[in-house]
Image 1: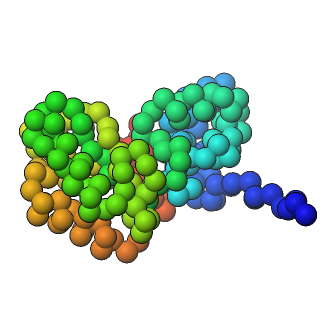
Image 2: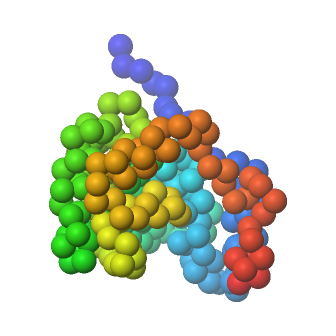
Length: 191
């Protein structure tokens, strides 16, 4: 017998909905599509660090655009994850300066000690996803890894890498989302 149960349609939390509306008010009503990038960021934060097709459909509904328009944007930008990820997405810079300073060795070391593979699923413990990215604009501190808004610099020794992973493993809770705290910083809120 086949199951007739369907997964519940994703919905934004009240706080996220309020933040989306605040962002959308910055644009004319006929230009809500202009809010797509920040709304996708909110969606990714709300729904486990990735934007499933169902979540992308929700973004399309909220913005009043066709789902394909959201799919085009979310698949173009590497900052949006289109499949489930670990608690921490380690974005490893792979451009020239970082490669010269050992990013290939860093990647191999991270794969070895986390068990995750670049472009593959999260580590077995669900903590780490490895992702190679283009320039992180911190060439003087290469090799570098970005985790959310945090840069981990000069990861050219096993000790430096181990210190980063220990710090990440010790984070008990995910960082608070901007709209869950006291709102966005004035510099962002006023733009």
